[in-house]
Amino acid sequence: MSELETQVLIIGGGVLGTAIARELSRYKVDVTLVEKEVDFGWGSTKANMCIVCQGGDALEFRKEYHRSRLVWESIPLTEPLCRQLAVPFKRIGELTIFKDNEGMAKYQKLKTRAESLGITTHQFIDRDTLRQMEPNVTKEAIGALYDPMIAITDPVRLTMALAENARQNGVNILTGTEVLDISSGVDEFEVQTSQGSIKSKFIVNAAGMFVDKVAAMANADDFVVFPIKGYVGILDKKVGGLVEHEIHARPEAPGESNIITPTVYGNLIIGTPMKLARRNDYSTTRQMAEIGLRNAQKLVPDISEGDIINSFAGFLMFRNWELGWHECVVSPSRSVPRFISVSIGYPGVSAAPATGKKAVKLLTQEGLKLEENPNFNPYRKAITDFSKLSDEEKGALIAEDNRYGHVVCRCEMVTEGEVVEAIGRGATTLDGVKFRTRAGMGRCQGGFCSPRVISILARQLGIPEEEVTKKGGESRHLLYQSKQLLGVRE
Image (cartoon, rainbow, N blue to C red; front, top):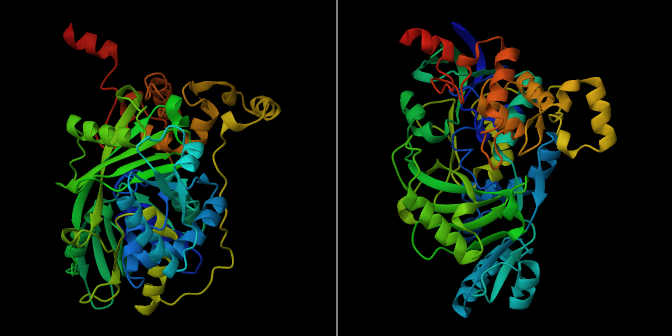
């Protein structure tokens, strides 16, 4: 790409950007989405607890706030969306435990607030009922506030599915394309990227951690956001049965996050402290891990350090962090016409469906003319999950393509056929395969399957194995062949 023209340019391929792209693909409009990474959902979206909820803290604030409204409007939309896109979705319910009557009184206020907003699913359960539902929860808990509507999904897979479906419906999607500068003209923008220039009538800025930086390029930064760093620990599947619901407790200290939740794949994940931090500092520390483990053990004492198989840090962009809560940015610029910025903070995945619709509405208010696309197809087929097939189905598939009979990832039982499917869907890296198939997400964290996946990627992409990367850029696993190293030494 040296020069491109489009009607609507979406900057950012996280869950919000791809949700907007997919929503726009319902209409006859020329849309381009650019993402600076080589794949989708690797920024703020990945730093997610996988929970689909109305946001308990949002219940404490007025309904007219953007974030609260978008989350509530998304609740009935998320499950049908996941079904259309063949993305895992499971209702697990939430148990917010309390250890004394004072804690119960606080949750009574939340329950009353929810009921005033028409949310009537919350109910109190006593100690005995809590023990029946979750035998491994701390014995200090005397009860819990139960919300059966809380669900879980896979945020990154949802993002990739949204991008894939948007592309199927005509959206032009460019990865590895970083926005470097934006010039605002009378009728259009000229956007300089790492791959060339793009002229666009409208811009939707969904750049996640850099939403304010991108807005500043166009002098449209009429808002302030704060980078908040969080840490997530992933537990081995062998302890996945310790809890069946999301277990939550109000933090005992500012910045703490006391959450344990199942995933749709059988692991548990634990949430840990959030604090202001430097962008791009994805480092994790022993202190963060210790605090996270200690908080998790306050909820479920049987969790141990040895159960943690991986951990990562990520960022959310909050507004008004100094006030103890955060409101979102989903609005056109007050000074630059046809420029819309979108940032949700937590829980962004929960708000994505309604945010997509809201952004489209704002675009029309800014002057975009829309006509429905009669060829819009809302459905997308999932990559084969060989492990979930019956023996008869497995045999038939292997007879058709023997690559499905070759297990590449033993921990997650992922076959070569699934890896090839993932590459056909756009995976060009180890992480691209991992997030589409789970190859490398088991106990050994890729120790067994990584060399095999690298070999398949090299073969399918027609590149040397040394050029295969973990997540693009310089993140190569193999620097050179052993024979080359020996030759240099000789």
